[in-house]
Image 1 (cartoon, rainbow, N blue to C red):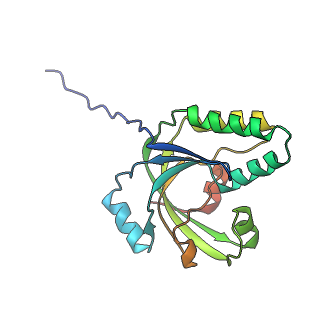
Image 2 (cartoon, one colour):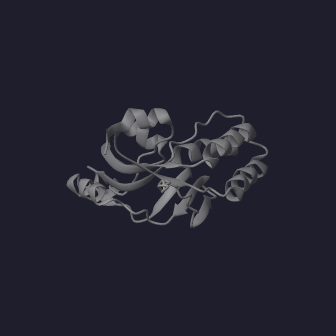
Length: 193
């Protein structure tokens, strides 16, 4: 009698919506709420973290968006380049795969870091996030094209979804932590859950 082998098939998920924000050049991939394991929910509660009100993947987050808008403001071809950035983002399928990897990230925001993130009149503070790693094949190729279009060296963000967040400065409790690279992830990693 032949035994059946279990095959672990990972399921690619399709985004709910792709959103390009014109004034900031941020690009968000809105997704449905992932199923969060009970042990991760319990850990988030123990840490006093809040569940995010919506779930997305940042293809272009605040810091990279600011670099792009600064570049565009100095370019004579800004509309053409912005159209290429937008259309390049919108035409990709952005299928993603949820990985069974959860991490606690912590970061201190001083005034320099707050400014880089595009905020004003915000005091120094700490932020914590609980993230889930994802596989997002389109991300690296998109950044290669972005860099070619603009002649920049933007680094691909660390592919993840922020599930929970918190801060010792309450108005920022629902904000994530920009993880713009593998180096950022390594730098701010508190623990694997």
